[in-house]
Length: 451
Image 1 (spheres, rainbow, N blue to C red):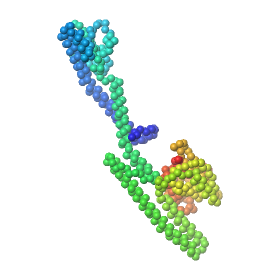
Image 2 (image 1 turned 45 degrees about the vertical axis):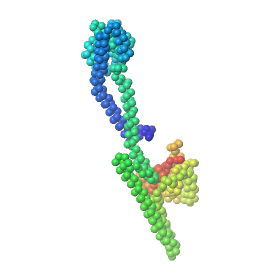
Image 3 (image 1 turned 60 degrees about the vertical axis):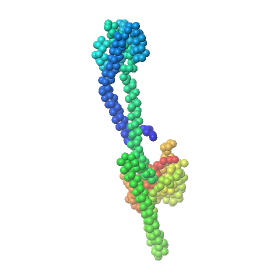
Image 4 (image 1 turned 60 degrees about the horizontal axis):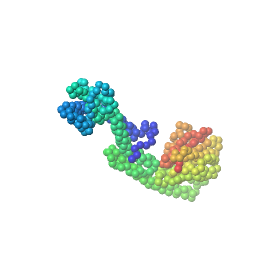
């Protein structure tokens, strides 16, 4: 399981994983600091008493053994103390080089407790005559002696050791916080990925209905929503098929009757125009409602497709086409739907982008590849040289059934052209931007991930 990913400042501020991770880390750190402080406070007294009792016991037993032993056997006794117990006894001389006692936070308490038992004149040292250890003085009659213990026997945890343990606990705590954050956010990541798949027109795999009750309920509701949407799509497909059949059949019959009826040419042309407009409106409804399946996506040669569209449009008598198309521009998508999108944009420019004072529409078709490596995007621009659209009304162009009075007073159709374009591009994960062109006219840009 991958716990860490490259971090940016924006992600650190907004990412739920990192917020959870930081909160858990702060909580763990504060808990550990509080525990160490409380442990030191509670354990300091008992630990000092234990070490002092150990020193008092060793000194008392050693002094008693030396006092009651036969003088001839004291040398052998001292040897056994060194070899078996690590205890050394030396005669205290006035000219001994004595260092201060060991630097230990427990040492003041140990000194106080030991002096209370052995006498106020008891001396302590960390080094005598260059020999390191824990040195304690004691008396036998009028003679003074040094008793040296190994420092490890009375040494508590040093600052370095505390730092080492604290670092280890901190590392384990951070790893635990990262693991907990990842587990907590895993259901949300799956839900986000599934929602993104739906937005792209794909049916996501069912979310696992297990784990905490809240997660189970959320995943169960999401899975039910996906099933309901799928059923709605199926029902809509059936309804659209019925509309196509039930409406176009009588339209075709009416067209035949118009041809056979005894009508004037003007009346016949008018009725033909009305029937053709009705058929075009039905086609727009079907195009708007038709889903774009991600399973049908293939590699699309955008360069070749734009050249073909430009060639087809250039044959019309009222259009002038200018092209600037980058070579080898390719995207992933549905070829038929993308071709329909370009045709809709060009047709929109031809109808409503007439150059002022003329009956000609000048259309610029451009295609560029921007970025590098995996961040490359194909940007398609279609712009006309007409009067453009008021800036405050540009957003209205993408709404279904919207026709602006200025530019579409003579428009035929239901006002779904650009709405169809936006719907198809959303399913392709593309971006659509509309703006007024410098010098007049409308500029429409499509940005898609390149392959």
